[in-house]
Length: 175
Figure (cartoon, rainbow, N blue to C red):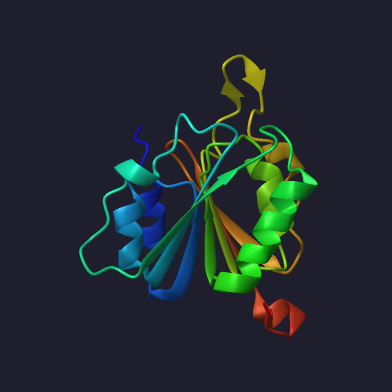
């Protein structure tokens, strides 16, 4: 299994480049996201500064890339501070797709928060249900997709793609 096994899921499912991908957590695979979007915004969200990947992330020359570091006040729960930060970044960057692969463990709560705010949500490590002895460390049991989203799971470390189904609701998401 590879840290970047999510790339195969993108190749299979994201057929046309989107406008903006907002990546929560950056690293070795960030450069690959430019194949799927015109612009990538990387938000490195951690509860400490030790594992910051921003300085180690390699970006193709001339790529349309923005990056930010956010020091979260929690790891296993989505706090009001994290929600406020995400809300402000959704308004600022208006992403078509959010890729959740951040260094904090409240990924399930983040995915749940993003429903009905973003057309496409992709999360990595959705097949991981045990980390450092902690059952469901990423909080995947919190993910309860609304009926207007379809989803597909890819094996490996686990990548899940949720897509807003405009035909079910009859309206487009406005961000």
